[in-house]
Length: 227
Figure 1 (spheres, helix red, strand yellow):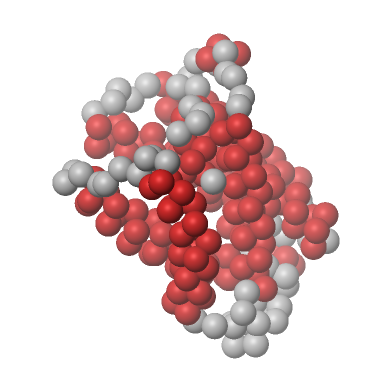
Figure 2: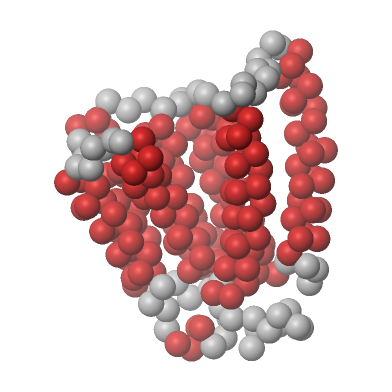
């Protein structure tokens, strides 16, 4: 849904809505699982969202006034809700190896994506990767889809979904830095302000009470139960 939405809406909308994932995780953890959400966690999530919005608007808040929302934005919102649910589900995932779980999800993704893939070909929307696109495809498969997912699973296992979800807001922050370093885009003052908000928000969200770290958020990997 996220990939399809990218062809229907703008990058600003994508970034802003994606920045809501940590908030969705905290809300679902609170009202769906009865977890305690501290004021610091809520403050950290809000600060990071403001930072993401600043990056998306490129420091010009007047750009937000001209945003128009469409079906693509709704698709991103649903995708973010699903990813928040996935983050929470990792807390009680089956006690199988990370590679085994990833293989199962990959098989499910293959089966569920096959029909729309065939439909995309039939509609003439499929484009073969170019010579420049193939390395990007390999990176997307081995980086975010493979290594990134394994690290994310392990992170949720170690610190819990609420605190792990806060790190999602670093995606647009890293994207902005890479645009400066790799693409030569100018480093503006709003980058400093936005990055400080995002990193500071993530840091604040990690300041959970010690009793939570010793309880619900940390798990015995051998039994799958809370310490």
